[in-house]
Length: 458
Image (cartoon, rainbow, N blue to C red):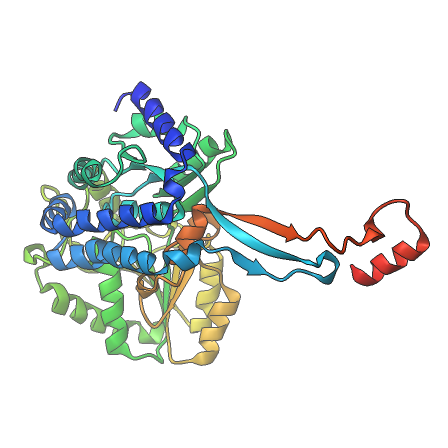
């Protein structure tokens, strides 16, 4: 899409929003129903696209992308009427007679910039929220997951109102041009470096942003845990999508005298999931491109690889890999891994894990596996993270009643369920009063009697 057409597209969406069409709840419902039909009727094509882009299996494509988004649409359709209703709040005595409420209203025209690792979910889930709230939207899928992006660009105009929702394909040039436009909200999913660029561009128009970033997600494993269930859940959450997940555990902290037991159980579970030769396993994916393949290989240089480490530059294959006790200033511990490499750190006492976590930027997700309630409370009270999973990995994503978002370097703002609706809404303050019983205490001329009454009432 050329520069002039990006500007024209934004202008068209702004005109559509001004027409008021998107504010109608029945219209919003119709768009959500059409979006559901788009996904349902083209499931097989999306599975093939995700397989081509990321080597995702059909079950993984369904679980983390197709089914996830369909469930999000159903939840939104079921709750949309209640979310959009005025929200009553109490009115103090001094303002009586009157009533106070918050009226959700759409922000306008929004920009959604998706990520390549979940190229369907991370574009369409924010779109579900934007539609539900009554906005127009431009979608910018990642160019790295090109097949899925192209499929979205082809299908969305066939199902959704093209005067309200558009897809822009391209790379840095197109994204840069989009960021020059005036939007009413920008939701970006991706890395911290580009997140800063998005935020600087948004500041030009004082545009609010939701940044879903990432970081190094820690995982504490206490020796007082159900080891069999723990390693199954860690292996699933780490090596789904070949570790290319922003909330995948990045490093595990265990007590030194428990490390060998934990590693033995974990490696056995990896092989139970993906066999002794994951390269031949249809359920195990590939790295998105050569640049990320090289980046991940660089992390392994000079490290103590105790499991895996097999690579293939032709297919961008990296086996499930475990690195033991790297230096804390090494790249594998300084940068988000975002791949199939898991770091194991050992401590004398598990409570020391809290200091390791707090010495680093706040993560998008933190995981704790333990039966110890005191340790659980210590971790919850003494650490900060966007999301916390206790005795499971990533499953908070499956609850639409929980917001998903980061804190600090891992992002700002949140969405999913009603939180997504609210992200793309302005909760307009409304106070309605009656004309009768107009107390004159606030009006001049002032005197001591009025002041004394005001002190009692306010």
